Image (cartoon, rainbow over all chains, first blue to last red; front, side):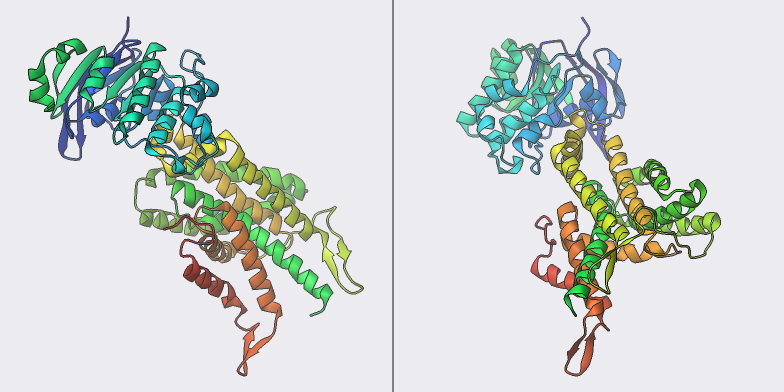
Length: 236
Length: 298
């Protein structure tokens, strides 16, 4: 089976600084990949390189087998890759309802699994706030809004960058619940998060980045069962 | 001033204000959404007026000249965005100012080559040639009322487009977070090309419909450019609603400033200093709200 996403030998620079040193990443349909590493190790840059938001200097990014290394970000999104960025990226000048429906569409295979009704059922908080401005929401609600908005594009891959960052434990738990629901619905996900326990519990496979290189890649269980890797690379 | 002439001046003020709004709305949209300062905006107003004059002469009907002129200016807007403006989004505003100032010069030169440097006029088109009598001696031209009605209809249409449609949502979203809009699968380059062309067409359309009531002459773009910027600043950058309120205010201040006599300490203030009125209004508004009436807090 072809990978949904296959990145090979990605080298990405910000100006003169070399951020990613030949990173490989593959994601199979329906798979959940946990991407970990301390701050500044290149996790977000790797995601942005895949999404076309940052151009890798060398290497290739394939989405469902098609080379999209130089494609515009909207082409990659239309191929079925949805993004929930760090810091959320809601549109504060649009209402909650507008945020949700502005980009809603059938997926790359024509699927309409996620409708406004289903998203509101998954996030009852959003239904209560539907008429509010995006900027009036709490951090947790904004996170739900971004995830709901991404789901309404009916993606095959959902990329979550620090989705629980800065959220209260109760709200975080709510987000993890929905991530499990997304996984169960068959959408492949790449999850970047600091919560080692939560990531390894949900991810099929884990990857650790240190200074722009992959230092660990394997089943989540192996990472859970080997505290030395964790201590060495993550400091948890 | 008696009631009749007051009414005539009020209608004039509103009509002038609405026309200003039509021009300034394109400027504020392009500035607010795309972050582009377009000094050539007035040139598009001039191009519209010349197109109306030349097309009406060639086709023989002002009413056919309008849609043809709008299509041509939409195409011109798309071409300029694609060829020039799109290259400057990532740059500082100074580059946009330089480029669009250059465009003013280029358009003036082209206008001279294509249409010459003469002053022209267009007859008021049928069926709006008549006037409505207000009192025994005063009447108001129907065409001016038509202008006001058309601009009001356009204002409502623009409001609905921006506030109620998905396209409008995407445009507003693009103003707040470009990168995110792209990552949702929306082609922001095409969206911006459309917004720019729409702004160009609005200014040109204003030039077209005002051609029958004011003469068509070289340099007519420069005048409206400055007033349009005053409208945008008073209304709040990026606010179409603000542009509407500010344009009507300027229409009132300017029109009544010119027909009122006011003496202060033996000095004739009005109408001698009426030309300054809108700048005083702008200064007043900026002292009260530096971000403009409907602008976002700075």
